[in-house]
Amino acid sequence: MTATFESRFDAAITRYQQGGPSAELIGEFQAITEQAPRQSAGWTCLAWLQLLEGQADDALRSARTAVKLNPQDPQARINLCLALLETDSKGVREQIEMVQRVMQMAPELAAELNDSMADGLQRKPGWPAMQKVQRWLQG
Image (cartoon, rainbow, N blue to C red; front, side, top):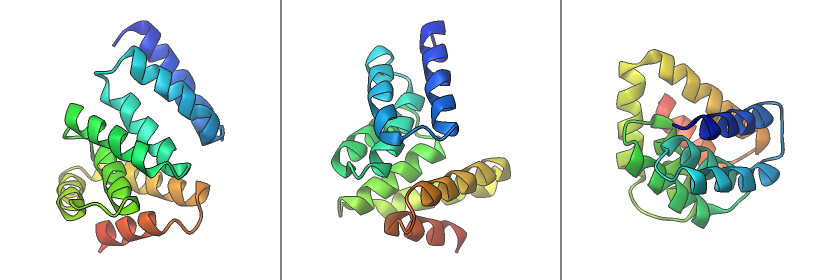
C-alpha cells in the first residue's frame, strides 16, 4: 500500500469510528477504491457503507470485488452475505459457512466480527438482513 492510500484510508476509517455519516463517507471510499483498486480493504468498507445506506446493488458489486481480492477476509464475506440477502440473490449459505469456519479457527476475528455486526445494528436499527446473518453465525 502506498503511504497516500494508507493515510487516506486511516483518516476515513477514523471519521467512521467517530460517528461520521455513512452517506458522506461513501464518496471518500469510492475515491480510495479508484486510487487503489487492488486493495480489498477499501472495497470492504465501501460495501459496508453502501449497505448502511440501502444501496444494495452497489454494495453487491463492491462486496464481490472485496471477496475476489481477499477471499480470506470474513468481513468482506459478511458484507457479501448482506448484499446477497438485500438483493434476493443466491449464494448466502456458502458465504456463511466460510465465515463460520474462520470464526471457529480465529476467535479474535470472531470478536471483531461480532463488534462489526453490533455496529451495523446500532447504525441501522432493526436491519433484517443483519439480524439473519447474526443468528446464523451465532447459531
